[in-house]
Image (tube, one colour):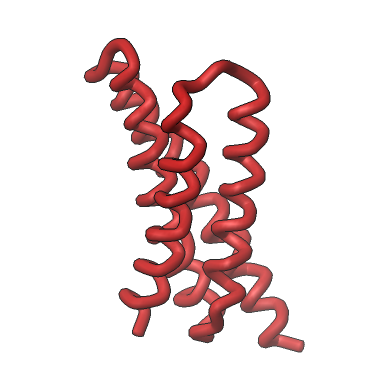
Length: 113
């Protein structure tokens, strides 16, 4: 039972960390970038959030299981879909965001080894 609690705590810690990373990177991006380049900030934020959030989830849980960063990536994917529906984005944004999530998931898995 304690293992399940640690896994849930790991996922929650990863999600909270993801939210903080995305807020910080997007705020910085809006201060530094203009025009269509401002859409690069969320891509970088998703990459960093998926990587750091996945690693944090595994470290807090004390387990190296693929579903821990997978849940983090799925949470971020849901947020990306909601974001895409809320406002207009350039055509390249959706595939770039998907690639950022895949790369972040893979990086979190490889860096936690």
